[in-house]
Structures are given as C-alpha cells and as structure tokens.
Image 1 (cartoon, rainbow, N blue to C red):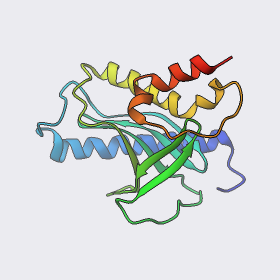
Image 2 (spheres, one colour):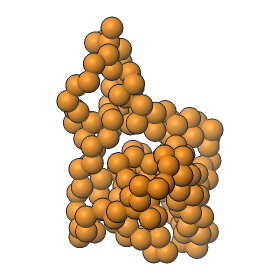
Image 3 (cartoon, rainbow, N blue to C red):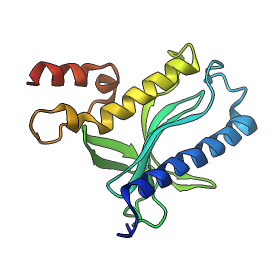
Image 4 (cartoon, one colour):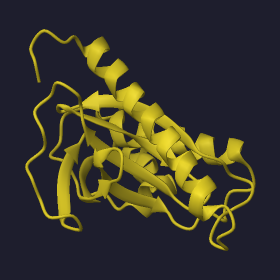
Length: 175
C-alpha cells in the first residue's frame, strides 16, 4: 500500500469497492438471478461495513441468494498473492482466522468470499438482513476491542459467530 494513503483514504476506497460490488451484483440479479428459486424475494442487493484491513478491502455483500464476507485488493495497494480460483485462502482478522474461497468476478477481478448465509430464506426483510450484516462486520472486525488482553486468534466458526456464540464466550471470559 502506498504510504501516502491515510486510513481514511483506504477506508473510502474500500467503501467505493463495496458500491462497485453492489452495482455488479444488481446487474447479475437483473440478467440471470431474478427468477431463480433460491432467491429470497424480500431481499435486494447491499454492501455493508466495508473497511480497509491489512491492505485489503473487507465487507459484507447481501443479495437475494447469499450473504458473504468478501475481501478484495484495494486500488493502489499491493495485490494479494496469486492463487487459483476455488482455492481456500485463510486470512487473519481481529476475530481470528477466517477461510475464504478465492474467486474472480467478471468486471471486478479477484474477490475472495466467505459464505455466511446461502441461501438467505431466514431473512423476512432487507432490514433484518442488513442488521445481521452489520453485526457480522462488527463481530469480525471489532472483536479485538472486546478482549481485555490480546490473545492468539482463534479459528472462527462463522455460524457460531453469526449466532452470537463468539460474543457470548468473550463476554463470559471478559473482565
């Protein structure tokens, strides 16, 4: 990452990548997913909680067919090491080590994804899905601020994390 970019500039670039993903996934939905049975008609497309971390952009993408934590290279940053699409890539986040699947999205480039929900029928409204996405972003990235002392990163079970188990365990072992 170029040293002249501030944290605010990197976070702004991450949010811009999130907006680009929203636009791309809206196009995918309109072209080929709008009538697919795995889609939840109560949901639309949204990018939530995008931020820079470790030289990459991270955030949650919600669509009518999935909710994923995603990682992408920041513009003007150092690209992630090249891998074959479909390869599992383990990335250290404040909440612990998280497995992503490396991929390529037409019109975007490399996009590593960690599936949180797929399909997404458990959400009765977009508001409920967005609330979950925002809580997931906080859980993955703000976990370090919840710990009383630094501990080695744990392997994150995304379903436990999203069900609140991770936070409850932290609260039980906290100060």
